[in-house]
Amino acid sequence: MTATTDLIALVGALKTAHVLCIGDVMLDRFVTGTVERISPEAPIPVLRIDAETAMLGGAGNVVRNLAALGATVRVIGLIGDDAAGGEIRALFDTLANVEATLPVDPNRQSAIKTRYLAGAQQLMRADRETVAPLDAAMRTDILAAASTALKHCSVLVLSDYGKGMLLDGVAKELIDAAKRENVAVIVDPKSTHYGDYAGASVITPNRRELRLAAGLPVDTDEAIVAAANGLIKEYGLGAVLATRSRDGMTLVSSAGAPVHLPAEARDVFDVSGAGDTVVAALAAGLAAGAALDDAAPLANA
Image (cartoon, rainbow, N blue to C red):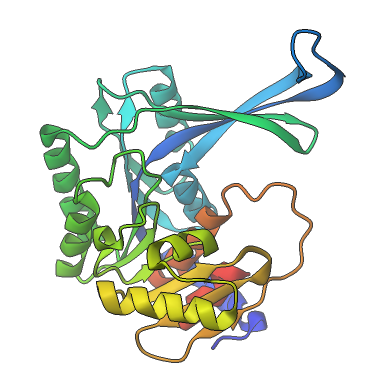
């Protein structure tokens, strides 16, 4: 496996990566301010707002990370016929080497996650979204767009946030289409029914997602490996890269011994989007020609 000091050469090669990302795109809003008192109306803090910012979230955050790593990216997602959808489209337009296909579904509102923060402390999050599968016409359009885009990419990322883009067998159809084009597939899962992702090259559950999907404990290294191996055998997966927060990651492959990657110590207040970063780095590494056991340490770093 590549030593950490040798990852620099791989980072330099990421600009050659061509990745397709399909999934639930959304808008992440951050409302920041200060809290100096408790409301007289209810036992809640009063946030005096100082600033509001917005950035791409969900599958959009995966794309943002890929672009930051220098990869060339195609993204397919859905937006609503609303102001947030226009904002999402405009944010994609600011990213270099990103081509966005964002059909408008008039029956769907664009997904927005709004986080309220006092300093580094998150007070609450408010979500506005439509959770529903694609209608027949939209499904046909999405699959057609994916078929075309797959011819120009070496890795497909399915970023599933459970909002509907990949429901009702769409994920499986995309995996099958990618396999016909010899394109590797990385899945960041939301569903616990891994039949939706059968045949994927790599799946990247966190510890909780792995436990729910496998129905097994995941509290030790050995348990993580056993749960991952069970999913690999049952669903024909190439590998499971289990993210374990402060305990790093575990890579379990259908061929080869499991590898435990320790986390590097960091002071972190909010881990939102960490999984997106892992998926982006893994996808960029594989698309740049790295082997899985080299791309995984890059994602961990």
